[in-house]
Each structure stands twice: as structure tokens, then as C-alpha cells.
Amino acid sequence: MVGVTITKHENGPSGEYHAHVADSDAIGRLTWADRGGVHYAEHTLVPPVIGGRGVAARLVEAMVADARENDFKIGPVCSYVVAAFKKHPEWADVKA
Image (cartoon, one colour):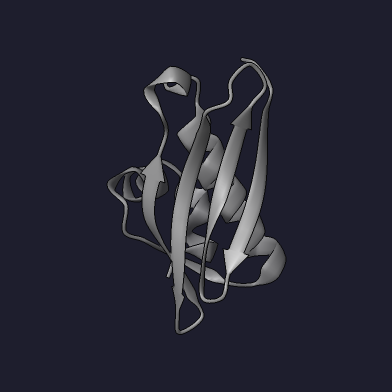
């Protein structure tokens, strides 16, 4: 897989994780909103041009790592994030 860099962008009580793929200008996004100390993962958006490369999975992994590092819980709302949490029971410690 081509290199993927994940960055976090916060805007008050909401934000996004961005996935920058080395060979493309397209950006994958995972959007979230904080309500009561829980970051609700609302949407995972990966443009078709960078799809099929595990970009969405990397976005969720970045959010899980961030939750562990910064002590917050994740509320899976987006169907992709819900499925990812079912696939990874080891993430139960950060699930709201």
C-alpha cells in the first residue's frame, strides 16, 4: 500500500481525521462530534479514487489510538465505524 498519513483537525466540539494518500490529492475523512466527553464518529468518507486501500480502516485506527492517548470514549454512529468495532473487540476499552 502507498503511504497514508493521518492528521487530526479540531473545530471546537467537533473535528475530523484526514487521510492523505501519497500518490493522490484526494483526502479521506472521518468526522466526529463531542457530546458529553464522547467523540461520536459520524461519517467515514473515502473518495473512490483512493478507495480499496484500507484508508477507512486507518482513519478508525487513528481515532482509537487518539482516544487511548487522550482519554476519551468513542461513540460509533457511522456504519463503517460500528462494523470496525464489532471486528475489533480489543477496542472495547474506548467504546462508549
